[in-house]
Amino acid sequence: MKSDRRVRYTRMVLKNALIDLMYEKPIGKITVKELCEKADVNRGTFYSHYIDQFDLQKQIFDELVGGIDQIMDSSYFSANIERSGEMLTRIYGYLQDNKHIVMAMLGENCTIELQGEILAFLKGKNIFGSLLLQPDIMEYLYAFTASGCLGVVRRWLIDGKESAEEIARFVAMATTQGVLGLARKGL
Amino acid sequence: MKSDRRVRYTRMVLKNALIDLMYEKPIGKITVKELCEKADVNRGTFYSHYIDQFDLQKQIFDELVGGIDQIMDSSYFSANIERSGEMLTRIYGYLQDNKHIVMAMLGENCTIELQGEILAFLKGKNIFGSLLLQPDIMEYLYAFTASGCLGVVRRWLIDGKESAEEIARFVAMATTQGVLGLARKGL
DNA sequence: ATTTTTAATTGACATCGTGTTCATAATATT
DNA sequence: AATATTATGAACACGATGTCAATTAAAAAT
Image 1 (cartoon, rainbow over the protein chains, first blue to last red):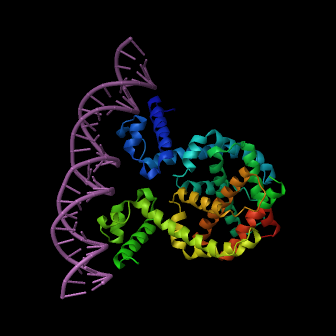
Image 2: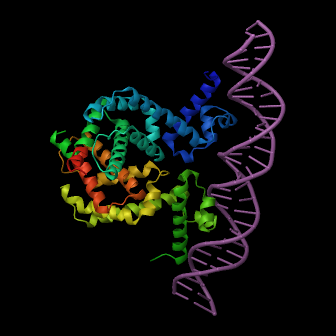
Image 3: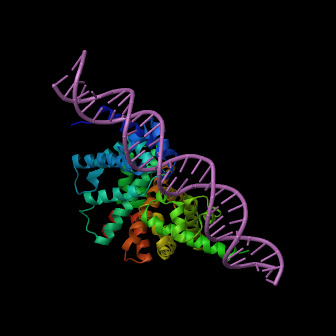
């Protein structure tokens, strides 16, 4: 049962308005009032959909993560790191397609909370499961890699000319071989 | 000319109060009112020292970065990555010593803005200057490494048993040799 | 096309945090 | 002890908040 057209419209304009505002200032400095004025939606209407700005932000974020989730579920994924290159490319492509939202979410004014969710998400996918590492080391590896990948995304989406595939290759190389691997390839 | 004892006291309790509150909620949800109540300082006094919560947060952060800056300046630092292990250890030790502040700053509720500052800081230090990489790749490398290192710090300070030296070794290995290097060592 | 149902708007409301000010009290400095 | 500086307490106007009931608008159902 799909929701009312009006509901979808209201939610859409509110989401767009928040994303735009997130480019200007941190979420905590955004008021519900200005958000509604920008979206041309009554303030009372906002409160019938969301608790506050943070609630709306979280919903936008969850949709984004949901998209990545779908890719990871649908894409063939072997325990072998080399073979997950295709999936990486698809993920980065997805992020590129949703550049406007991603930049708002990972931009200067965003919360690291979101980063924590992505980390948990990757751990849940067990992407390093095939490696025989100590549990502690595994923890740090996930932390290092998840944060590192997000750092690259952030930099890339600002003005990066590279294709999703190139970025995926860089990330794969940096993760598996490190700086020395990059230097070896003479990039 | 050192400042008045009262001034130092006021600033100290306000800083402590904010750090404590940052464990509970994002900076944007913290009000000046509750901050002052927690610190038992008059609200008017707060405004004679800081503009708002964000201003106070930034000052705490800047002090932290200042400490890292001192270490990087005082410590011998060669262009050779392997030789910077000692400096890395000292930095991680410093972060460990200031665990309470660092965790507040890098915790779930912190702003990525701070992460951006650390990235800029590392780039300014030109730590990968000796590597012959394309400028674009260099950008991504800094982004990847800075974010990755911070991710490790975040994970480590929660409940990590490792010493600063061990963490420094892990980061150095992950950065220079990647996952394969870690697996090779059988960690 | 008309009825029915659902959602959005309008205007109002008490409440709360904000940022500032001023007289007063407390505490450094000299 | 006298002076200068800082913190306090109380009050203020202002703006954002969250909620509400009556009304209008628009969708879905018949």
